[in-house]
Length: 90
Image (cartoon, rainbow, N blue to C red; front, side):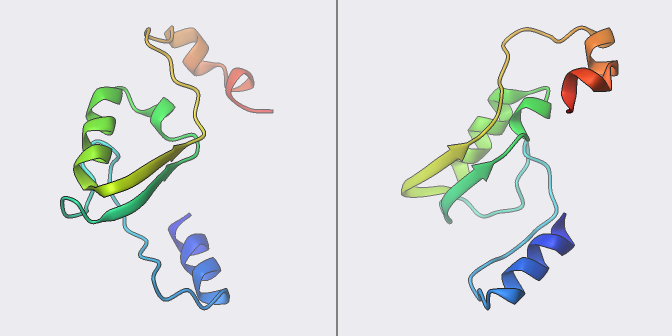
């Protein structure tokens, strides 16, 4: 996915795109440096959602924003549901 994102940015001549490897619970970004944080199906995969949101708010600039396209649950998903790929894809 990183390679695909980098290729897309190059094809559009976007010089302000920086693609990094990291974990949502420990972002490889300096405090207060992000204008927009985007998640499309990532937060729901993280077991510690509170840690993810702490990190998002840590890295956002004042006035920055978060754009999320995820399904979030507050209860543990049963292991048999996690193991059933048909429930997570279509």
